[in-house]
Image 1 (cartoon, rainbow, N blue to C red):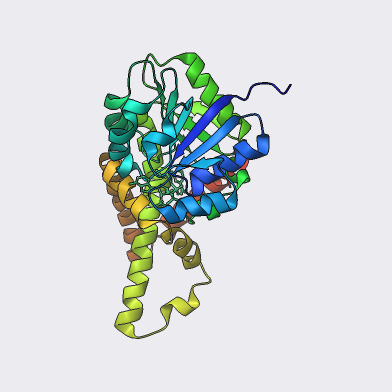
Image 2 (image 1 turned 60 degrees about the vertical axis):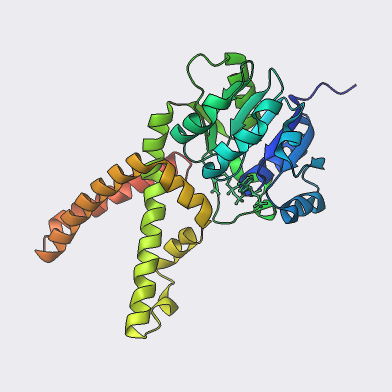
Length: 296
Ligand code: NAP
């Protein structure tokens, strides 16, 4: 007889890039989930999930999907969490772990926390892994390999529940770290949210310039600009929700960034090559740090 799986039944509420990648991990490993149940907003996504064979069952109604599940993972844009919780909270099984994969964490504690029934273990999570692609077809089991997954359990959360969820993410290939939601949101504001905001700004500026000058600016994208266009292709709904739900930290980082940009602007204006050299050399050192941390 094969040993009992880590989770008897896992409900994925929202199964796009991240949810489907996790489903693929669970199917690959074999002993993580006895049954995978998926729910999404549209029939088209549910049909795709069945066609791909990445869940054992799909349910249009998220309340039905979570019934009897010992692990529920929210994998929709964070702005949809409150509405989903309204539908599912009365149907969560006692003793279940309720988690998510959302890119902001204070908002998840705010929107989900108050509706978590007694006896359900709430362990928010954020895998720091992704691509600019969306939907269940974009997922792949190796997505989380060598990446971080940050858990932000509220104080007093059952340690065994936290450890069980950490086991799932470790088996997905991730390194797991626990953090305060406020700290998470500040760190991600600078490492992920601000870079995306810059990408949309620069891509928009270039597109406007092309329109103004009636010249084919975008034809010459093969330089640094190309990397920005990749980031700027990310899902607009997901990112709108991230910015609206991590407002304070993002605005602080935009302010810091604007100040630092002014320093470079001034150095260029006044021909201060030494200032530019110092800033650019620091950049190389930071890149080396990212490579050494195996996050390149
Ligand atoms: P995605 O590929 O766009 O998939 C989103 C899923 O959520 C789809 O199954 C979608 O269903 C469902 N959904 C959307 N709105 C919903 C609603 N109102 N109610 C119920 N289900 C809804 O998104 P993703 O990239 O996997 O991102 C999912 C979550 O992971 C987000 O919170 C995001 O912040 C976080 N995250 C993303 C990345 C990344 O790089 N993409 C990385 C780390 C964390 P339909 O297809 O039927 O609309």
